[in-house]
Length: 126
Image 1 (cartoon, one colour):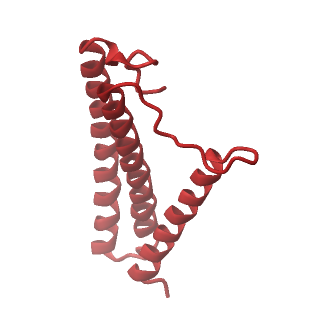
Image 2 (cartoon, rainbow, N blue to C red):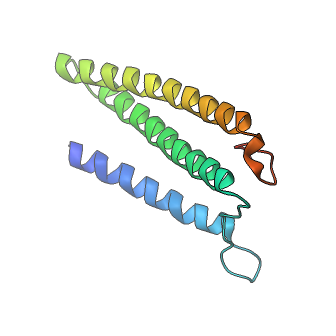
């Protein structure tokens, strides 16, 4: 029987394996791991921090959708588990919408403050 602890453990293992893949993505041919924080100004640093924080919360929201879907599918007629699964999915979708709006707002503010002053012109995608 799959318990809540096993699901949480599985999600944590999935996130840890994602961190390992992220480190591999930054690795150079023979030079080790490259420093991903290459900034020219404080605005650029803040934009990068916000970008990574919002990306992490988006990944967590997607994981919560998967968790809610698992609860929904495995409810087996249990109304409380069915309701919990629906609420988890709805909450995660609302969270993704809020994350997207926050991303747009931060990008607007950074661009309004003079383009961020960095090499990428304040663009959070760079």
